[in-house]
Length: 361
Ligand SMILES: NC(=O)c1ccc[n+]([C@@H]2O[C@H](COP(=O)([O-])OP(=O)(O)OC[C@H]3O[C@@H](n4cnc5c(N)ncnc54)[C@H](O)[C@@H]3O)[C@@H](O)[C@H]2O)c1
Image (tube, rainbow, N blue to C red; front, side):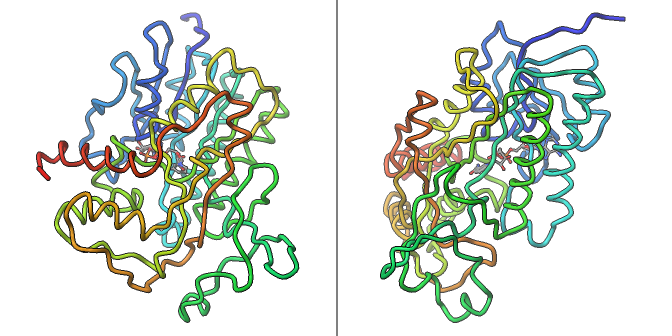
């Protein structure tokens, strides 16, 4: 029987958008780095190893829901850190496929915990990629009374009648630890379940847990074949094809678009040996500066010489009205700061998209 080795980083979903970017930043040659990934065909154009994955990262093609995947990975190895990225990620799809989302996101997380127990592995830290989705509509401040309270999911009737905002109130930036969780779609509920499961398990096993609640991540390397990968990729695809970008609601929805080159360093920071926060810690990862969806669509259309975006008044069940976050906690405690504003980040993303597709401006 071979001796178990200790140390290194295991990344579930490690061949995806964030996993590959993180590997290129943090998978140094002296560090064992194992990406466990199904290479989901909705996200990966081919079932080959992605070229964006750091060359010395090992790739284990397997499903986190399947105990055999964990047995393959953990039989001879006890990783120091586990970064849990594997997930079904699209909000809209989650309403139609709740069992798929709960199986991968919730059951998959439970299988991870069970496998650690089965193989008697206790990592130093687990890091989970959570989402701004856990805040739902978030907290709004009443204009007349100043009262701050969470707002419920907008009803079908409100959306049908074009009542997009909560009248007489203003939204506040999300702030981990202060803004309560308030999920309004199935994806969000599964991300909150991941946080809850891991918080309980890690506290009882003495494992430090870092929860990173990500805003809208974009940038080079994001799947171009997945139609649900995020609105920026969709907008760029449409505008590059010379089409009008359809913008939902009245276009005034706010989002915090954070570039992958700002997100990967936040993960790199929490997995580094000199980050020593103990217990469960939670951070919002965004730029802290929101942009309206219409203004972003206009910038992309202008950049690509496409027709002006069209505000359609359509809507998507489960979408929230506004979402952005405070970043001061992450800046103070992680020694990390977002560097890329959405305008320059999107411009660079458009260039990458055109190069990737052999197109010219
Ligand atoms: N990208 C964003 O805007 C964003 C925002 C908030 C939260 N997140 C979270 O960050 C994490 C990573 O997101 P991403 O943008 O890199 O997504 P991604 O889809 O590019 O990567 C996810 C990876 O997980 C793999 N995967 C899916 N199901 C699996 C399974 N059952 N077993 C093993 N691997 C599986 C996929 O093949 C893919 O490579 C997810 O947990 C997501 O919920 C992302």
